[in-house]
Image: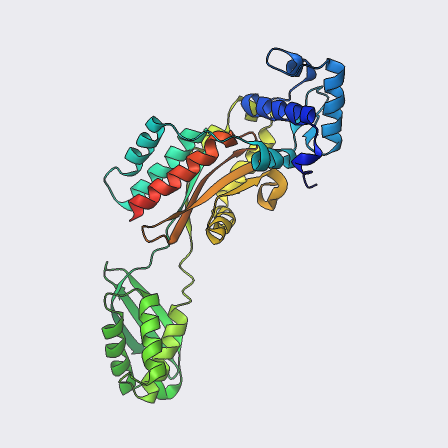
Amino acid sequence: MNAPPLTDLSDRARAIFRLVVEGYLESGSPVGSKALAGEGGVNLSPASIRSVLAELEQRGLLAAPHTSAGRMPTDSGLRLFVDAMMQVAEPTAEERVAIEQRISEPGPIERALERTSALLSDLSGAAGMVMVPRREPRLSQVSLTALDANRVLAVLVGEDGHIENRILTVPGEALGTSLEQASNYLTAKVAGRTLAEAAQLIEREVASGRSALDEASRSLVESGIAVWTEDASNRPVLIVRGQANLLDDNALSDIERVRSLLEDLENKQSVSSLLESAREAEAMRIFIGSENRLFSLSGSSVIASPYRDREGKVVGVLGVIGPTRLNYARVVPMVDFTARSLGKRIG
């Protein structure tokens, strides 16, 4: 059910709705009419409050779990609150300094990513997640060896010593002396370049007729480019830290939900696919409970933000996952600031 526009609610309905949501996010428990009429609540009788609560429940914004007299926000209610009512709490100066110092500690980038995931977990009280940037290694050499009448083994050697093999299917006339010519040509073009960069250069030269290749070698090079640029090994890697934070007192009363969430986190490829949507949107994404099929059973929320290198290119995604009662007002700007800080570290 889609949340109604905020303008459809009366002033007192908005006030009571806000108090219920904020009370639930703070305590993790349903909020009753007595609490709403208490100190700091609304100046209405319990009967009037109950009437408004019933209206909000009918609109699909609140629900009464089990036999409790209290109310808690539905996923639609949380979406309305996050999109239209939430007042974010920006990180303090001390928090910003702590985040930047933690991320900028010396060491390989992999360690920085692990620290970032743990940092997000500490700050949010939930689990932190960071998708590792997709690596595009720079190459130093390519060699080609005939396997049979129509297959060639291509060996790609990276500047870091990493070696990958590809088996190419090519026309028979592309074998023989053309292999050596094609190997030399490819090595000259890929040296110091990423595969994507080398592919673009070679494609331009072949298309313009400027390459020093005969027809057989050209066929071999074009076959190799097509396979290499579609390398399926370039899959995202996900670092998750702080799963223990999900096992708090409230979670223990709903252990099946937590078990479902932990199982979801074990399926890192599915979680990575969800985070990819934030990369594609190039903006902060907030998924609340049943809005996403992956977490519909566990009733969890995900706050995710892409992070960029210094050229502004999106290179990965980070965020937190936890119960729907996350402190969105604090966590959303914290995730955003952490993403910007990690981008500076990526360089």
